[in-house]
Length: 367
Ligand SMILES: [Zn+2]
Image 1: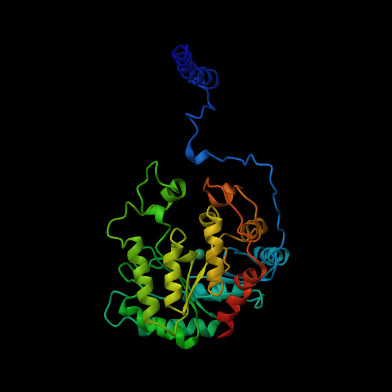
Image 2: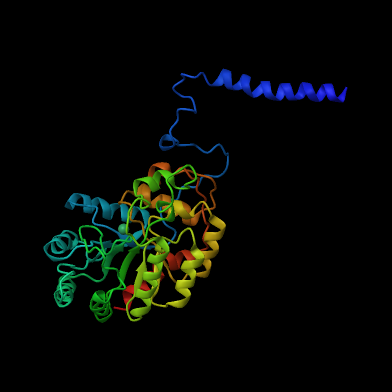
């Protein structure tokens, strides 16, 4: 009897899913899951749980990582209006520019000296020639006189200081040719925002095990020959920060160590002149809210709010939802391009105040 019953069960078990499959998935159905591409996958949460809208940040904000997204006076005015609406008192614009280009951007934003602060780039002209250094330092001093109050976003994804319009292949930040520039930053009390490496999944195989595949594929580094790998770039960052203890470095995007915050913590422990900004790494940290919240608590003195994602009011509000609420399993696929679900950190007031403004003021007021 038992044997027969179990035989019947196994037949049923086999037959049932097949029936469901046959009914639900005609082979030529356009909506068949067999035909949905990962890039088009935009799930909606099924959960009936609280959804919190945060129209304005709980405390005033200094956004330490933005770019000159607004081109016209009208757009700049709209940006200021959005900043007022969401509670951003000041935005640091990382122009990455020097020379006439920097001056032009500076002029555009000069109408709002209390709302925007402009940082410049480095001029790498002639970096491959002997004698590189004095002219670049002179240009930095000139930008300072125009009004630049920091430097950034410098960047090295493994090929050298190649970021924005600048190209200095093979020149890494720990190179002796960079020493005079970083020393001058300390002298002028200009903090340096620096981007090293990129998220780890951009270095990994672009296959069905890659956790950030759709985003990773767009910015892939796995197919780039002769680049310094992720870990090597963190070593370069460490040597740079160690070499210039008087210079304030802000490693942007959690130094691209959002996947291994323990290593970032070790760097912050070792080097008091190092800070990290959280810009454009909301989607990468919100999937692991408990671990990340503990990190925010431990390093609450060293983390800086930043966006790096345009100036729409809705963009700021998404960052507030991640930082301030305890909402769970929500998607912001359009903003971030990942299909991961996000969770709020529910950071306490004392941490929010430091993250949003107080830590930034420690850096900006030192000048
Ligand atoms: Zn940026």
